[in-house]
Amino acid sequence: MSLAVLSWSLLIAQVMLALAFGCTAWRVLHGPRAQDRVVALDILYLNGMLLLLTFGIRTGTDLYFEAALVVALLGFVSTGAFAKFLMRGEVIE
Image (cartoon, rainbow, N blue to C red; front, side, top):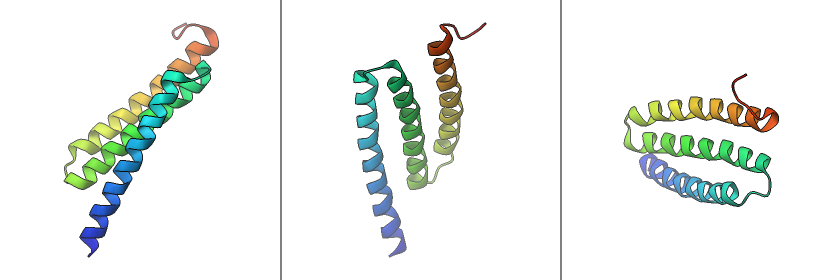
């Protein structure tokens, strides 16, 4: 019973995260302002990281958890660099 509940809840979470990924990708492509696109990119990497985590839980391999950690670190740094670029026009001073 417990394994079936875990399997179904992971499947539902993956479907919901895939829908959120699609909605966020639409916002990145059709955002009215650059600031909206930065926030959408931030949410996009977050959704991707959560999808990797759910795949890792489902398959039981550590590779997905390590990939999610790399995505989280690179996404955080890239969001900060992109926001700095929008504020000042250059990333490296």
